Amino acid sequence: MKKKSKFIMIGSAVGAMTLFTATAFAYSPNTEGYDAFKAVLKANHASGDTIESATVGGNFSITVDGETVLKADGSGKMGEVGGMENVSGDLDFTLMGVERQASLYSSGDDKVYLVDRTHDLHYQVINVDDEHTGEHHDWSEEEFQDRPMNKAEEALLDFLVGDLKDNFSVANQADGSKTITVDISKEDIPLPVRLLMDAASAEERVGRAHAPEAHAEWEQLKQLPFFQGLEGIDLEEQLPELTEDVAIEHVRLQMTVDANNEVQGVQGELEVSGKDEAGVTHRVEIEGAGEVSGINATTPEAYDPAGKSVEIIDAATFDDRS
Image 1 (cartoon, one colour):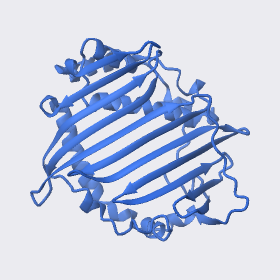
Image 2 (cartoon, one colour):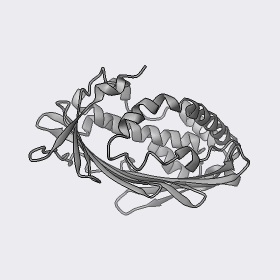
Image 3 (cartoon, helix red, strand yellow):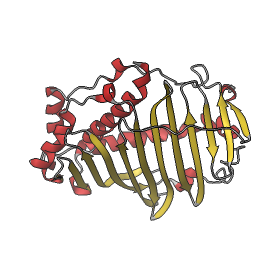
Image 4 (cartoon, one colour):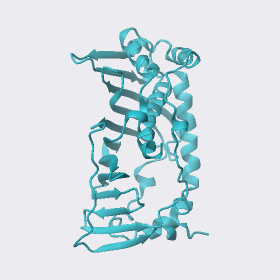
């Protein structure tokens, strides 16, 4: 049913991320550690049918050659308020030393408010509908059918894991929960993952080539005080394009699941090295973590415009591109 669609999407996203990590990181069928990991993928979870509300939190950082380029922390609450599907969330980030804080409030009657907490400015976004949100999609339960991993998928997983069985470990807690960890060094990275890395590098180059298509929207956005001070940061310079000798140096994934093998949190680290077009070697480290809590016990915060000066942002204007 439609009111549950966002929560189905959350559960499915966590499941998809877990499955992708398994394939991308070439899971290791070890004894206890690998078996615990595979049990999570094989579990037939209840999914969005029983999730009416939840809190999702996470953090993310990118470090290049020892210097932190981006550090972000965020949290979001989703749930039903007054018969409507509501969302609220906070995002704090630091990009090349420039700090910004923002909040979002969205209710089922299509009201969306953005708060620039850095400058204490408030905005209401109008015309947020199917026509003006571009790739908006009305997700349905049928598209996110939660099911266990089938035999063919399990066989493929076992094949990809190969000799990495010993890279998995599991710590069992007294309450039945588990912490599953996979740690893979450069020497252990299997060929399938290296091929995926090459494909990702090629896709990134294509993405950079088409980046100018987003310039029109950026020209509009950077007029807002929230983005002023960020427009002078050259991300392409801070995030070098690795074109030669690209290699995964280290991968670490830690997953926490409850007694029912439901994912409660994920932490990941990825370290990549390579040379740019000038032949200069760089090392990029990406770290991130996410957790789900307050399942069926979360109430999103509501925005109260009373006494505030609220500026209107028309989402329709962002489609006025040639």
